[in-house]
Amino acid sequence: MSRPSVAFPWQRALRSITARRHLALALITCGALAALPTSAAYAQDATAPCTDTVAAAEEAYLNRNYQEAVTLASQCTDRSAFEDEIVIQAYRLITLASLRQGALVQARSAVTNILHIDPEYTADPVNDPPAYDLFISLVRQEEDTEGTADAETETEEPSPALLRRNEGGPFLKLIGVGLSDYTGDLPIGNAGHPFDFQEISTGSGAPYLFTAEIGYEFPSNLALVLGVQTGNYPIVGHSTGSNDISGSWRHTPQLLVRYTFGAAGESVAAYLDAGANVTFGGEGIAGPGVGPSVGGGIDIPLSSTWSFFVESRFNFTLPDDAIDGTRDIGERPGSSTTKTEDPSGSITGPFDSVNQLLGIGLRIRFGGAAAQE
Image (cartoon, rainbow, N blue to C red; front, top):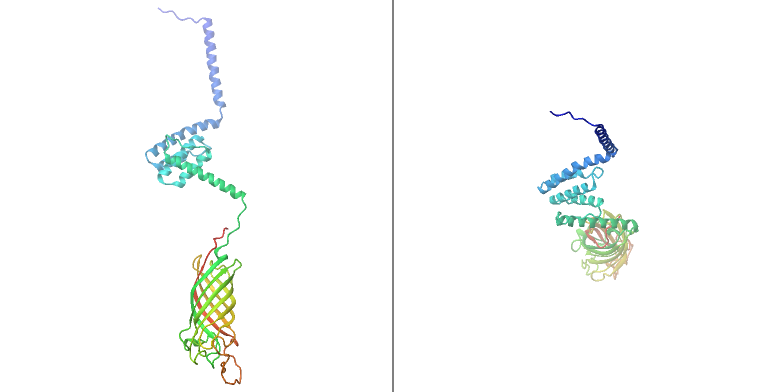
């Protein structure tokens, strides 16, 4: 028969002290937990599930579910909610999966974010593919180059704008064709003018001409032009040979100054020109004549280099008998005819003229770079 245990007084005291120590330890532990910052507790709770998400993204990437890997990893890129290490891991998976899908812009953006977090970041030579390491190096070089360029742009003075093509440079008018007109003292008995179109029904051949020019255009919209006009003027040779049509071709070099209204080569632009000419050709008593030239036209751009033009030009000549051998109605050089009056054979008076009533062609401009805005 067992005897009931009896607790001695010293045993009861020891038990009381031990219980109090356990109670104090429990109170201290609870107080320490209560004193921890709330944000730290939340961060610890938030990091744990994102670690699982990154692991899931890693598994999806290994299983070649690249879009799912990007979607999962994108949930862990908020630096305010997760640790930098987790965020870098997430951007790493986004980069790897994006490269597999050919989404280079998305991959570059992810690497840029990694380098913003850790500028010294490098790929793991064991776990990361060489292509990933190379891509990080390329993005780092681009970032360094862009930063250097931005710094130079802020410190350097802006360079002056280059001239646009239409603001200067040489140009060439390829062969143009046009309708020719002679206005002078022939045919005798008619008061001629540039638009009488007598040449169409009278004279030698059809009224046509060819033109060409070379020039230089200045930024002030002025141009210096050396041109030539050569054509058939059916009536002009009526009196220069044996009192019949002969030598109806005349050649007219011109030196002109041209002013263009607008940006030639960029938009439809009108121009006027003035200068001097020398006209020669023909048979018999025909001789060279000199005088002023005036004209104008429209320039229609086809590209930054080519343009189409429509123009007219009038070339006046002196002396009066130079290109047609006739001074006025009723008198020819060497004739014994006595004049009773001295009417002009045309509206141009003592001048004769060889004109381009309407001409068309192509013009090409050389040199000049696009303007830097």
